[in-house]
Length: 246
Ligand code: FPP
Image 1 (cartoon, rainbow, N blue to C red):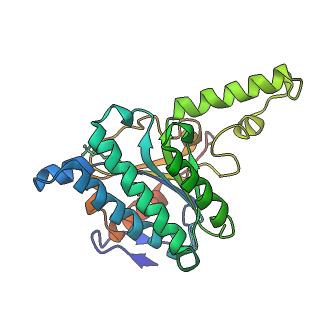
Image 2: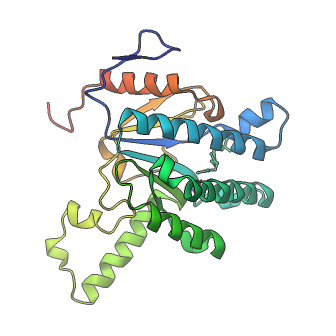
């Protein structure tokens, strides 16, 4: 048993951990605003929180972590904010390459990377390729990601396979369709965490979230601590998952 510091009653049973945790890293802007900092300062603090929480997820032995870093809608933000997020991502990935043998994460990406700066695309490809040797803990970074966009691109690819005679519409199954999603090969998230008080899915993992448990907290992402993760896992372990059964 592990005890969370913030919620002393929250006990985590290490034998019943979620296999896949997904996080909507929300609240960076409000965190910065409260401190009279530019929004980019909130994202920088959010990237620090990610380093800390990813390390904890790996230590706990949880094999999949998915993070919503940049959505298909986030392009609507001010250009300075978009480039600040892209800059943080670049630094994060360069650091991941440098420290790969120490940290041992497999890093992959969900989303349409073709809209990113070519240098960043190349860096993503390099990180994806060279981290494939560490499959024990896989981190999926959602970049230019939207759940609807993911489903649409899957349908397009599937329709192309049908037209080319490589797929038969009558034979399509859920498992077969999943093969076209960005997340192919990754089990569905068991637990989706959204900090910052918002209680929305915001186009995140629409297909994959079908049976996920949701955990919301008012804590802003840059303030999110290891104890908050333990509290989320403890809450998850209190839920009765029925997957539509009784
Ligand atoms: C949502 O908070 C957060 C984002 C849109 C960006 C998340 C990016 C990072 C944590 C840093 C870069 C990512 C990596 C993987 C290193 P918000 O800005 O919508 O917050 P608000 O609702 O308080 O305005």
